[in-house]
Image 1 (cartoon, rainbow, N blue to C red):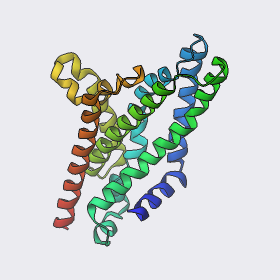
Image 2: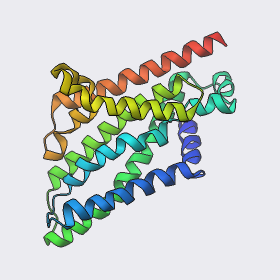
Image 3: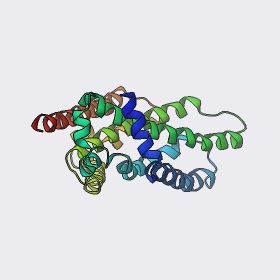
Length: 228
């Protein structure tokens, strides 16, 4: 699994993908930081992640669209299937590599928190900051697992990316149709974290989605491996 993680991280950062993701995320975060924090004279760091969570809906496809579709397109999927690594190890390894990119982005974004602490005259809102960072990681885990699942269904990374964005966007509006659809909306389950609240229901919901789509991805790839 460690070899898969290293390979994927090299793919992210020896190509523009990782840099584009981090750079785009930080660029838009800087705009949000000025508009919603600096211009409004607030020192609430969690507000930044309230808005960047919506940005993640669009940018997560950069990390996941080629996760498995790229292997099929490049003809390297067979090499994965015939290697000594298990399908489970491959899926989890790719998942963790994408998550590491998210964590790196979060660490870089702490620069904004440091700036806010300078304006506030000291360290501020530590519990709320930790809560929103945890929530953002949980949201990213759900998104990565979903994007990886979509990527496993097609051999075209662009198609995988578009489908991922469209379906994640659709999940924004599902709760407006029926209350029960909140269980299908990752962004809806994230809403409590910027307020400094760790909801057990929302946490379990995000983790359950992550597990579900990870298992579905493993199932899809295992069936394709058995056919080959």
